[in-house]
Structures are given as C-alpha cells and as structure tokens.
Amino acid sequence: MEQKELKEIVNRFDIKGTVNAVKPLGDGLINDTYKVCTEEADKPDYVLQHINNAIFQNVAMLMDNIVAVTSHIRKKLEAAGADDIDRKVLTFVPDKTTGKYYYFNGRTYWRIMLFIPDAVTKTEVTPETSYEVGIAFGNFEAMLADIPVKLGETIPDFHNMEFRLKHLRDAVAENKAGRVDEVKYFLDEIESRADEMCKGERLFREGKLPKRICHCDTKVDNMMFDKDGNVLCVIDLDTVMPNFIFSDFGDFLRSAANTSKEDEPDLAKVNFRLDIFKSFTKGYLESAKVFLTPLEIENLPYATALFPYMQCVRFLADYINGDTYYKIAYPEHNLVRTKAQFKLLQCIEKQFPAMTDFIKTCF
Image 1 (tube, rainbow, N blue to C red):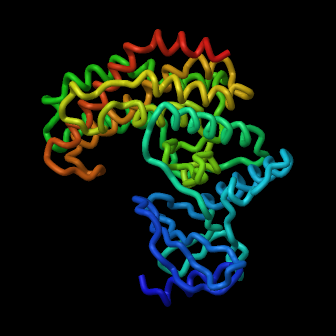
Image 2 (cartoon, helix red, strand yellow):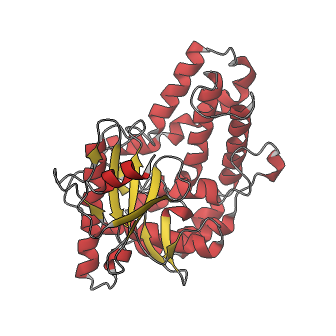
Image 3 (cartoon, helix red, strand yellow):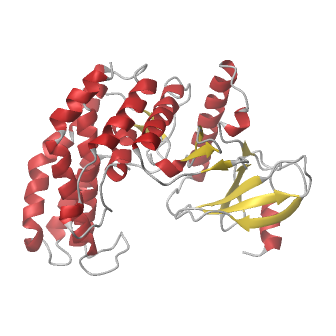
C-alpha cells in the first residue's frame, strides 16, 4: 500500500504528532502491521494494523472486546500503583470522527495503538521463558476474572471440542476425497476418546465449569518483554473471549512442550517435554490459583491432552475433505500432521500421573 494512503488512514485517528513514515512491522500471518513514526521527539510512535475481517467478521465486537479488556487491565494496574503503565497494557486510539476504535475505508478495517518502545518479543521456548509465560497468562486471566462487561466470541466455537468432532463426523459421512478407509485407525482412536475429550462442554452444561475471559492463543511471542527480559504485557488480543481456562493452558503446551514441529514426519522425534509442563504450570498456578476452582485445577492434565487431540481432529477432517482449509506443501501433509499430533497425544497420556503429582506440589 502507498505511503500516501497509509498516512491518510493514520490521520483518521486521534494521534499526537505529525506522521513522518509508515513502515512494515513484523511478519504476522493474520493482520498486516506497520510502525507509524512521528516527526516530533516528544510525541509517541504508533502501530497501525489492518484487521483481517475474513477471520474476524464482527470487527465492532472484536474492538469492543479488546477495549473492554485493556481498559479493565489499566484500571487494575492503576489501583495497584504500577509504574510505566503505557508499557504494561496496550493503548488503542479512537477514530477522530466516529469515536470508534477502528476505521473502515469502504474496503478494509484498520486500528491504531501506541507503540511500546524498547520492547521485544521472543520465540525461544525454554523452562525459564515458559515459567514467565505461565505467570503472565495466569495474571492476565486473574486481572480479567471480575471484568464487569460480557465479551462476545470473536471466532464462534473456536475451541469447542463437540463442534470440531461434528465437523469430522460430517467429513466422514461425505467422504469427499475418498480417504476414509485409509484413516480408519485414527478415526477409531479419536472416537474412543471422544466422550472424555468433550467433558469440558459437558461440565459447563451441568453448571460445574465456568467460562472465563481467556487469551485463546497462548504462546511466547504473544507477549512483550523489556530489554532485561521481564514481561511487559500480553499482546495479540483478537482471540480474547469467554472460554474454559483449558484453552490458555493446553494450547501453549501443545506447541511449546512438543519436541518437534507439528507436522514432523519422523514420529520418533515427537515427544512431550515434562520440564516445560512443570515450568509453565508452576508459573501459571502462582498467578491463577487465586481464582481457579478445584475442578479446573484437577483437569489441567486433561487440558494438556485436549489440544493435540483437537488439532488431530481438525487436520484429519481437512484431509478427509480434500485439504480445503489448511495450506499443504504436499498431498499427504494433513495426514502427516494428524499422525504427529496423535503421537504427541499418546506421549501426554503416558505422563498423566507425573502431571497430577506435580500439580499437587504447587500448593
């Protein structure tokens, strides 16, 4: 996009200072992101993002969620007497004309937030970073445990296991690509675990399990660190919505504790790192145990298994459908992904006793 058009979009928002340049920032897969540099030394820089409304179709709800969350966190930080608050919570800027926290130019949606200086993201997963991430995401949930507004689902049924299984069963019934017979082993294994893996939705209907405000995309690079390695704030808030805490707990470990990539063809390389589980769990419980129920804590091993299972279901459904959702690099790619996630699931299941024992030591 041309500088002139980008600057016109930026100037729709109530920013301070004169725009000098708008430069690409990062390599996000969902939203195009730019750094807005201002001319004046005493004025802040900003981050401009194009909101992908093909994925997030209700942009008004999306931004209402985000502003409600960041405003609530800001109030909590102010009440706690925190310093440097603008570096510890994202700050969004409204459209000068409408007052909304997004701008629609007739074709695309945009938003602007303050740029956080002297901050970095990390990608490396270690026991040390996993502990810090656990504390940060647990604290994120804890601060939002009493948010007074009701948030919407920015991606409906995003982590709903019953919904994902229905999608798989529909794929099997249609058998569009004629692949059902070759994957019968995995279908049988999935169905043998289906009742247990859907217990989150079942417990919710029984009134035993609450939905809380969760991030729903927990990973190391979804938080900002200062130059000394201290966590500043959680970022990438598009998926923040009501869900079971299992989402934030299990989704992080699915990728972080995997000894290989999610589409590893050599299954001998796929294993589950109990050291990462212990570090993340220790940090998470230190900050989240103030609001978690005994039932939520008891089911953290279940949450760890849930997400490899869920991805196994999703990859297999796409393979059976003829690879219509996930991008593939070769014809068997989704099947390879299915096998790798199933191997990870099996490794996790073997670690259930060790996980349960470790959780007891955190209290």
